[in-house]
Image 1 (cartoon, one colour):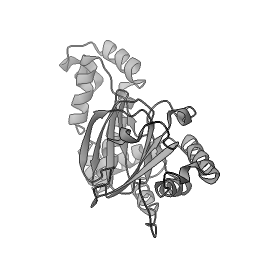
Image 2 (tube, rainbow, N blue to C red):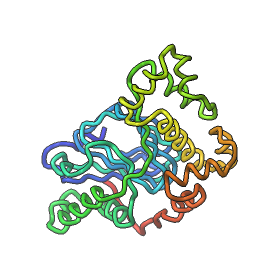
Image 3 (cartoon, helix red, strand yellow):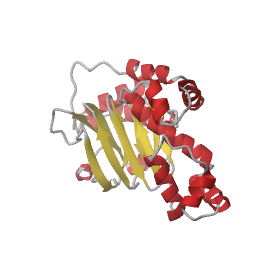
Image 4 (cartoon, rainbow, N blue to C red):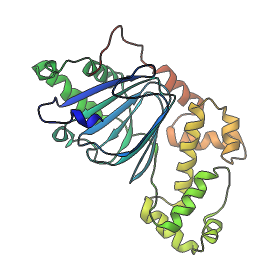
Length: 274
């Protein structure tokens, strides 16, 4: 769909705006995009709702007012939930050389958001002016220097520990040790421990905590109270859940949600899309 614009002669950066009540090229709302890839690098930014993306490297969850970077050629699957306004940017392959080689969720600064919206209003010829080229360079610099947020869950490929990982994701409130999970898959705890670390880069305990963290962010953005989230994830008390969340994000769930809501940009007086 978007690769129709990925031909020779197009600008370094192409930005599409999508709105829930429109038929724009960049479809938003609540939908699923099956596995695909783009020859260009892709940056997606949403103002409301949630974006869940899977790649061969694992899963990423993106709450509002964050941006998701996907390198050129990276196969991915995407699911949007309750997205009303969003922006999708395709970046020429050569301009991606200094950008991350793996997908990641990054913080969207006010400058980055303003540059995305500005680029979305450019006509095809305007991209070629010296002023636009300079702004494009600043935009790419902002992506490169943006802070990476801990919203990635690497998935193993070995079928035995992949089964364990899927069971944990399906039952986030169940608290079992790796010894217990390994027994259910007829694998020794030592082998399971070694494979988790080798294939995800995390110990099982850290991987399980990260899985719960992403589930917590999803519930938090969906409007669930902290006490309900703590119970759904198997924490004995809300305070123990809050402590885990704060270690990961350096702020409490309440402050995190407040920062998402308060950073929502005001709608521009006028805007366009390509």
